[in-house]
Image (spheres, rainbow, N blue to C red):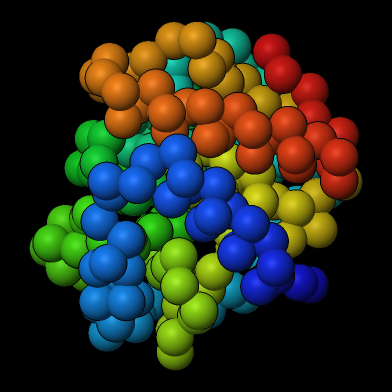
Length: 207
């Protein structure tokens, strides 16, 4: 199981910095230290699931799909799934979209970066089962699975966990959720590029 690809990480971060140079990358080292201190479970908390073909739900999904493991992107999506009678196995989040719903999943993959350090300090310790990810070289008790937005990071995670493909419900990059501003539009542009890139390595079915 490959869990860190330094060259892919460098590619992703070069793309992100080029598209969104104003984000708080200078605090990523501090964020990684916070994630390491918060700690959580090892990657074995995720390895117990069957990752052969996940069902990955992104906001604003509308359709339920089949999958070997149910992955929700953000607390918002976990809440929508729960309202439909589905408990996600894994929630991938940076705690900025209805973080109170993150614990509705069995395991939360919590990403810490320069712009959410305070939220991670405050919220992550309250999540019972968590795996901490960072966008720096991994520190103790953290992992780097590449990706930049929660959506593409969820698919990188699936790839690194051994997925041959995934069914994705709700990836509509022409629709903005939460807010509609230049930062959000550029993040969706990066996500669209990275998800297309991941399509070279795994079979992705979008609904």
